[in-house]
Length: 214
Image (cartoon, rainbow, N blue to C red; front, side):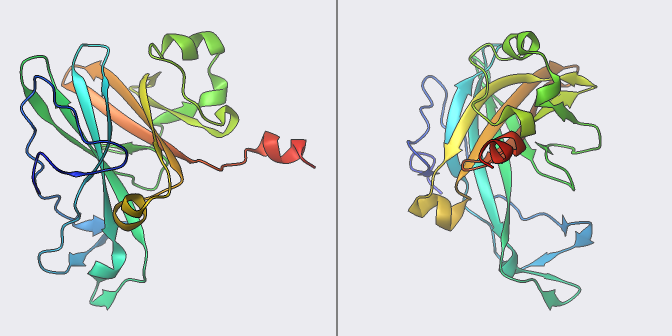
């Protein structure tokens, strides 16, 4: 795929002073839901650019999504039914250079991260409004808060840095997912930057919304 002309949801990446990052082939995962997966020879989804944001440390994050179609895979010789799952990829660029890719996936949980695990989030509704504002320097997430999850790192809530909406378009329907809000969180730690993502349906009705309409 050409660096200058990737698939995108709303607009192509603005690399600014950064050299366009090489969008390498996204190899399908070797396992899915704990089972070894074999994929059709040469199958690799084309990443879709979702948006970019400035991080609190001055670096910039370019966020992509990649959809894996299960009909392209077999488990123990059996073809999987039609469907798909999504992973997210973050290209991190410091002020002077490309800092690396972060590939975020789910593993039997709600959070997408480099290494998903148990206890990697708290209910957003359990955080006070003051804490939420402190953790959202660029503005708080636009979500149904009483049913949203806030990713954590080492037990502490991470910083919310950006939100990307995925409306129903030809690109999102054919290459990604749609009617989703994607929330990007970041935190600096000993090994560098940590990114995590949660999502919510754009037409999601929370429990409080449901009871309010009854």
